[in-house]
Length: 396
Image 1 (cartoon, rainbow, N blue to C red):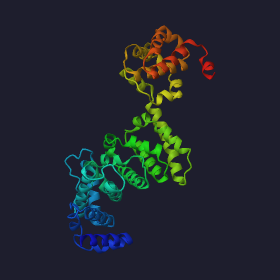
Image 2: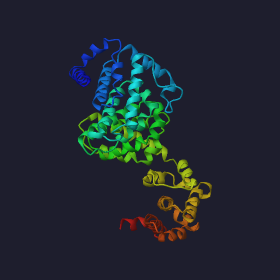
Image 3: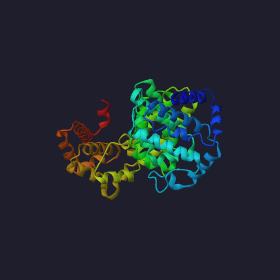
Image 4: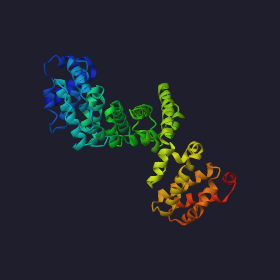
């Protein structure tokens, strides 16, 4: 039967990868397997997929794959996130087989059973698809082929903290896929749209398995070092530097992971410094919408830029005070109060300047705000305005 034959082939390929040469000697050993993918019998379709992945993996050095690599690397449109005019199908039989198999895999992840689920039962096919991509993406041209098919967005749901050992393995394989995709410079926009970075950071916070941490950290490093640093701002907002610093305090069996963490921490620190320049901060304040960011917890920024607040007759300070007066957004009010407190702390004449601009009255008015965080930040601001030696008061 078909099921028995597929089981036999799977066993042959699992026991000895060299057995794949028996199938490669045939002119076309792929088409019969491709015809089994649409079968309603789940076992047959999934077994055919496994055999195809193993056969393709064993043939990575064939002339057709080399031709596919050349085709993908030489055509900029084939690696765009939008797909462009290129269909992502390199020339040659193997290229056509890869394209058809990727279409089937992404279709299963998009509408089939197990979408975003990595476990037994309904999640079995989703786990198979992730495993298949982890094997296929070892070849660079396959990464370029997966990009316009929405592969990154389909993999992101698997980047969630696991609740069982099977889910942990699928998480690892999904992370490996995302890591391999991070080598594509053209994938930056797709990574951003897929919200892959926040998912990776959450994994780094909550998963302690070393092999998972290793691949997540290496992916973050790749994203940070993409041309133009497109993720530096998002990494600063997500406080990735703090996450990496905490990871560095852990004990890891792999010395290479420790080296990568040390290197990444240095690179992130430099990126955060670049993202917290005063001009960028000024632009944020003038936008009228404030949010919590690394600037709030970076004393170096406020110390180094204390005199910069004097520009244009203390324009930034005036805008912060105006926000206290007119803004209806609780977060903006709380952050503005916090930033005024930091200005008071680091500028030698900050107290006098803010009082001259009626800042004390504005801050006191917010102490009765219905939002607790606004009350808290307003109170801290007023304390620094009213107490001369506030450092002693704070220590007490």
